[in-house]
Image 1 (cartoon, rainbow, N blue to C red):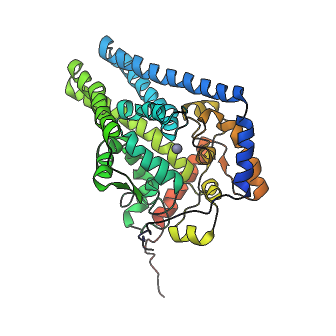
Image 2: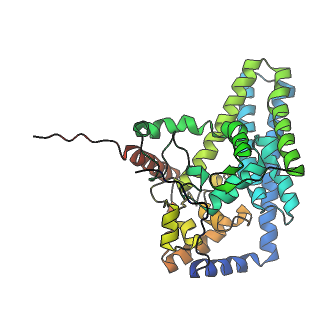
Image 3: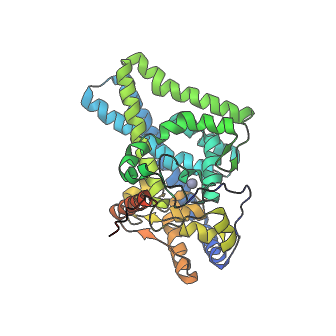
Length: 369
Ligand SMILES: [Zn+2]
């Protein structure tokens, strides 16, 4: 099988009874001012916890200069704070779900530049456009475009080393955020596109935000710690912090899209099938652990990834309730809706998907005689 070059223009069928009815019901649910206020209050409270956890952990490391045990606890606190900022603050804000105003959303979305080290400007193209519009579509969704390191989609050309991808993928996941912070942001700026989605050169405030964000991040995460600790302690701490945030982020996204139950598509398949966009989103996405309140809180509702893909501009704190509506209408209109009941089941499905794709296309010896 050969990886094809995707055509430039790709559009899905819009509308359909499933999404029309679902949207009406979700609008009815959100019509209550009290419901909306409660959702935002939960979002803002979580933001406070995320910022406070990161700030207190960092201040402990810099000003208290604790011993190894407390130092590791503070580092873990910083990593958890960063994960919360990634899932529960910047993600909602960069989707426009945090405030009504676009400007304020971009300002809060800048938390990814300043606190996590990757560009919110590039993220909005990579995530909002390439991933959310063309989920699991070859050549368009940058998240599944990981050749020659990993084969995540059936249309990626097989290579012998993919046979071991279910093993070596885990250390690679640990490097994901480091890649975004450095090469991926710069490569996107130079190429002017992410997958097949155009990225215009940032201007004025966007450019200032990008450069200023990198400077702020490098200052608090590397420069200030170097004033307090030897370089090898800072290096080890920074690598551990980034690897922990990377692993949790990559795994969360992969469990929602790169599993046996999720559909993958080619641009030609999308054009030929005539499947409405909303149905494609539900069938290329999987929820996991919907009844786990700790994961639901920590992952910013991204274990309800189906609901997130259908309603990315609604604060994630509403997803558990919206899931009931989506699930019911999916059953009514024959749309395949999958929710893995446990983390273990979701991880196993991801593992089997990687193994199956890693083995495809490897020559099989035929014994004559
Ligand atoms: Zn998203």
